[in-house]
Length: 479
Image (cartoon, rainbow, N blue to C red; front, side):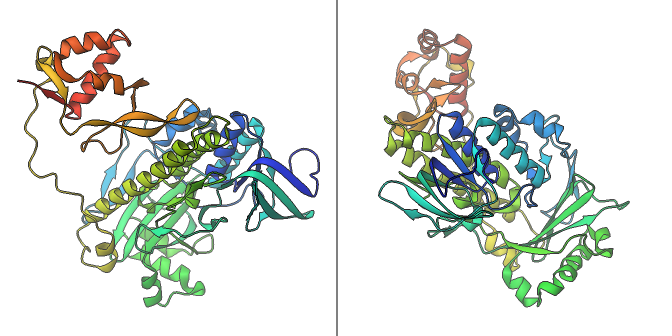
């Protein structure tokens, strides 16, 4: 039901967010904090079970900035102290994260509830449970037919946010970024069995991932080609036997094969894809509604949260009276595409590291060796050696107009581009790079340049910028 009073048969709101997973709940919360009237529609009652329990260490700063890190810690989620990896060869390696930099293994039902509660506390109106049907575009905004326990309703909104994951309620075509992949998953009761807190293991036709869940259950996921299931004659009734057979051939998880799983074995699509048009002036797709990544990195939740933050500032710019809509649209399209492409390159390189079964179809289809860096670049003089030499920006470097987040809006700003940089860089440590880079024309020594920079910023930060430019190979000494 809706928070607050019983809604009228037709509901009106400025922004409608469909889906209360991590991306939907966080985007709804952020938009409310930015002053928008937001209604969040979720099909299922919470808490509801969900897979995707791994949060990488990269999520910690984001949760901290949102004021949620302590709540995640207090929820009793597991922070694995080590993992077992059997990937590149037959050797089992124990990997420990740096001190204080471990990720979390969460119960998604509780984690998603935590994010939804934070959205409610920020003032988001929540309609749950309510099933959203295919939205219809109006002359101004959208109409969304809803099915609720009280009967059918109609929702009208100025702006629509699709955070429904792979269901993608807005529809549209997507581009596959990876070979077709399926995941079989179930939970086991661990008991006294010795299993690693988290593990990753390669096999002839796919790979296994396992992790200890809060509550002493152990999640196992097996990733393979759909053709492998067909060749093996796997049907609903034989999924458990097939998965147990994979565990029996495992070095790390074979002890679990003796028992049947504590839950039914489910199958889901795990293929990566990208929506080439995830945003328009009256709608946006977040999380897996915008793109899905190879599950190898266990960073799906991280990407969903990052997508939500990028989406919120984009929507805020599009709805603002003086917002630069062209910048907002370009920013979101570029950021989502760059994130998907970067992850696809990383996953392909990691698949290429596997050797024992590299000739098998599963591995051959996914292996994308990273470019050979070739001969090492000649050593550069240290920064101190450049202090009394005239310096300029490296020849391939230039400034170009790029959409950037400036406060709570997206706007075009000059950004530094260079083949050594994966993406344009407009700000470093909160300082605009353009005026600093513009002074690198070869007429001044580095020491003189730093003194000039220090008139507009602290001297230590000026040195930090120079150190970064030097480390990227962007400072070229002059004869």
